[in-house]
Image 1 (cartoon, rainbow, N blue to C red):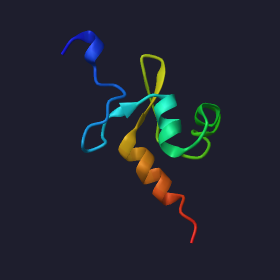
Image 2 (cartoon, rainbow, N blue to C red; image 1 turned 120 degrees about the vertical axis):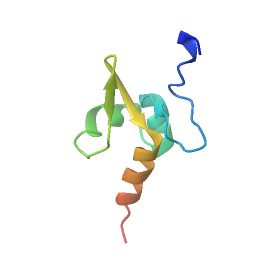
Image 3 (cartoon, rainbow, N blue to C red; image 1 turned 90 degrees about the horizontal axis):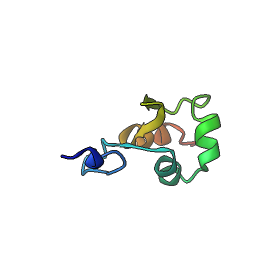
Length: 70
């Protein structure tokens, strides 16, 4: 795998890959701004790699399910 093919942002069948802010926001139906400003406050699991904010797709789905209102 070359340097440009790191897989960041690509989703595999298990959804365990990491995505950037844009993809995470789209996945949850939220804005990029919300992801940067509010995700930490609201407990969205997030990671920093090389100074960039990343999200794990499976974590996003788990977090979203926990937000369910009866």
